[in-house]
Image (cartoon, rainbow, N blue to C red):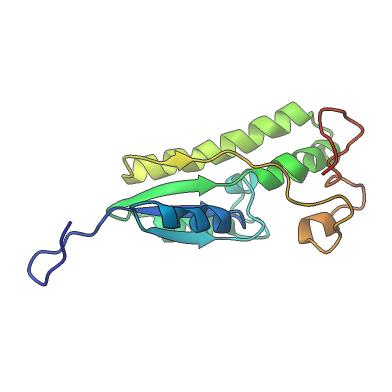
Length: 165
């Protein structure tokens, strides 16, 4: 790659898009050869990607930042932890739906946005996995934890497959 006044070619870069977990990815990129830029919307959720009227307005913010496609950007999406740790259970109970149906709704919304990026001209989109919940039991100062008095952020959920952290 080179950069001069006559003929400038921008180096490829990671464009990390997501919720507060973006910071962890960005911190790790200092060890990579490609530079990194990020777009963080705190509280963004995968299921919110289907809702243009969500409280965070994440879908609109992400679209405005990445469409039309940026040349040499490689989008890296980091969403889903809040869905896995809270939203799926909350929406299942609120809507009288199954947890599986809510999980599928989150996945469908997430990959709908991936499809938008591919159709916009990005040849590659990287999707990271949801990390384990980062909200500790009883951590009431966190906005997501405050939104439920029913303990959805309690990773114990009386299920041995979901131990307390």
